[in-house]
Figure 1: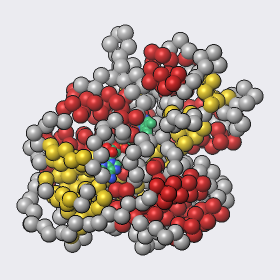
Figure 2 (figure 1 turned 90 degrees about the horizontal axis):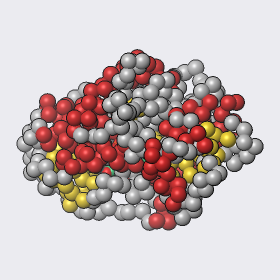
Figure 3 (figure 1 turned 90 degrees about the vertical axis):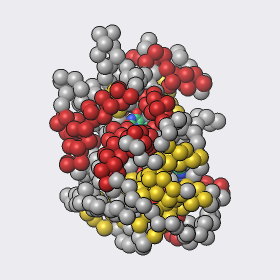
Figure 4 (figure 1 turned 135 degrees about the vertical axis):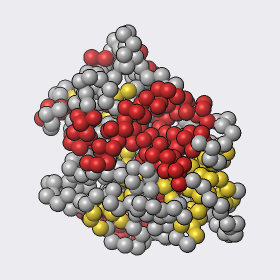
Length: 499
Ligand SMILES: Cc1cc2nc3c(=O)[nH]c(=O)nc-3n(C[C@H](O)[C@H](O)[C@H](O)COP(=O)(O)OP(=O)(O)OC[C@H]3O[C@@H](n4cnc5c(N)ncnc54)[C@H](O)[C@@H]3O)c2cc1C
């Protein structure tokens, strides 16, 4: 089977790209495991950042993004996303996303960690749910879209170009293959992401020769409630933005000793602080009269987990949440492989630097998706020759292999890393019987990237090298090659990568 465009993934990146391509008359195929609720996009609580109010400006949004990015954000890329944000919000509003308003009819914007202004658009605490449902309602019966339920298990290549994907031994071909499959948090045994999808697509792209960058920068969400028998519950930063604060066993507001922004410090700072404190808890007493109405999903889930209303305190810990690294792509998703596009969390554009600013990821995913669709529409489609690729046999990993890999990543790529643990993890991986499996090869690339960055910056804290180095570089890795240092990711993605 074939289509003009194959989009793998039905999170915000996949659906926005599909929306524009399909409405431009292109024949679109969306491949995903069938449940739009099990995507990080759907799980997003806090919201999406854009300048809107008179007190704010794109320049301030850029400054906050660059400050959180710990010196590694690509300024041109940051400028592009911050400038594009208000138009993307307007596009979502026009499609029907019901962002919250106050009593005067103005948008009710909020603040999250390391934002200097109120600029987070949200729909209570289920913003992702509202966005995905709105887009899906437009698309699920669209005449130009074919939906295929399943996981891709291979990328099809011809003459160094990606020409299609395999699902259940069936090949699907297209002029453009767009990966919108999210990040790689699920190489860890536990993360805040939906547990249903493994990061196999990025591993397949790595095996196919896609250039990767900054794989060592993994963002931990500082405040996650992990209760036995329940999936991890992320307690959105917006609660701290609206008054909640962190305390330790002695009831001390410990963030005061770690950062001038206290509870709203960048996520890496808060995560490290929490991991160093005894019995860290989030005190939500300032929200007790508003939490049920303002954060209904979080409140319901807290009650499900036995939350005691009279204590006001939620035990929290940092958990793997967002992966900053990924396939090197420009702001339209172009990669170094002809025919292959990467949009959303799977891509590394340089926007987030070494540490993502809260609520900038839905923004990046949506804007990239629109840029990618526009590029595809502008380049147009072309006839494909009949293809005769043999069906590939996919060798899935056993649950024992996956548990082993997840535990190894959790142990070696924690909030605080050591050389000893990283080297030991590489040895274990290369000596494992499945070491040639794409997921194992990809995990080796992540750990190699972490070993190579001999400094501590943003989402990579390396206790053997606790200081920030003077040299500012992105790490870049390609299969069977050494880790390289590159100064800008925008210069690394190719300009024209049509088949
Ligand atoms: C709990 C939580 C809360 C968050 N809150 C916010 C927030 O408030 N604001 C913000 O900006 N960001 C937030 N984030 C981050 C943000 O949600 C993600 O970065 C963003 O949604 C990624 O979108 P995406 O479209 O790239 O990928 P995803 O939404 O992760 O979608 C990936 C898609 O790919 C599919 N897929 C995966 N593997 C395969 C395969 N092999 N074959 C076929 N399909 C596959 C998945 O099923 C899914 O459809 C949050 C993340 C989490 C987990």
